[in-house]
Image (cartoon, rainbow, N blue to C red):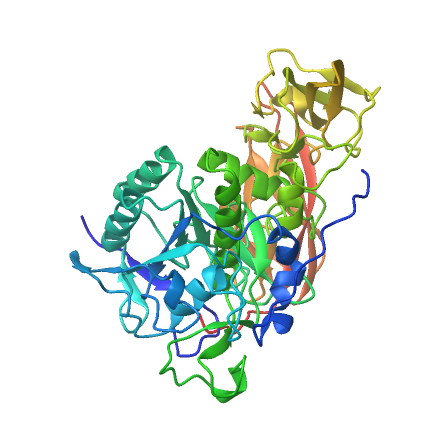
Length: 513
């Protein structure tokens, strides 16, 4: 099987690596770790509150990367590692990190807490199994990744962190991810640092993984973020302070937790993925019975919507919220919780209803609605039940065009049946654009840009904005909003379809990948 190039996904590293109702929350406990108060990501993602419930005890996270350690904040939680380089497996290789990337990732996940040094990890009592597959340049092969995933599962880990990626994936990688899923191991993957116009990064692009993008201190998307429907959630990923090797020669300007101590700030979706892996470890520590799908669902269902309304291609379901995760699991009481729904609003593409955060449902039902709306206990007067749609997933059909969908559940509250309805999906469309952002220097084929459930002839014209269509290619001319009118001729079973869409034209981002 040919190897595929993988690269670590840190945008700015220590070395050049390529790669309802209000409830009163818990009081977060402070730490004596010097950098604890400056770990902004712990506050933004509400990690401190969740740590009053779980610290990751009993959970092992595999960090498949460049190795991990040595660092005094990792000593207690670092298991004997492995290295898999060009197919050769080496044992007892925890101290093999030649570039510092894997050490930084491991510290975010499980840096020791309250030891009066450095930082505090998200799951400070979890264990790290380091598996090195990246060389001293931050490069690795997909064939080694496949072996590493299988080895991690066989070693009994519950979470696998993949802060790395490539442009494609093989059948062997697909089977390895399925092996992890079968054994209820959550695989968290960095979404990539190639900028808004970059193609999908794998294995983040695989539906089995939890694909994570980054946000900065203001919950905005940094310039290196990629875009796409494959992105599931966002997490802190800019200027993250964490562990590096004790002999690291990090840029002094990025030192943290002491000017001479082995800690530095790094940025990238690598760091964001580590945040989510830490949260997954917190979940498994208190709910070891959960399936991998349930862990993914509760993380995405409770994420804070920070981009365009609903799931979007910039932030996915939104910013992870560890407090909301544990609130959904019943640890922080709330009087009313609702089912959730995740959908791109496209005919033929599956919409998913979520129920992890509510009591066991007696009935599931999808509804077709005339107008959008928030989650509610009231029966929406403009919604009708869809026949034969009583599962947690539903694929919109031509009957749903221009409608909004809701996901409803029937539960028992104190012995009384009660329906609860999710917020609505985006308006269902049978014609769309596959991306929402285009770099000014990039021309995009209309055939690649426009998608439709209909087989009718599709025509596209520019309505307004800094763009033009030349020989069936969209050509951006300057930054701004490009408005397109898309028409698909009538062809059974679809009528004539029209859609106006807006694309953001942006200047190419210069990012260290």
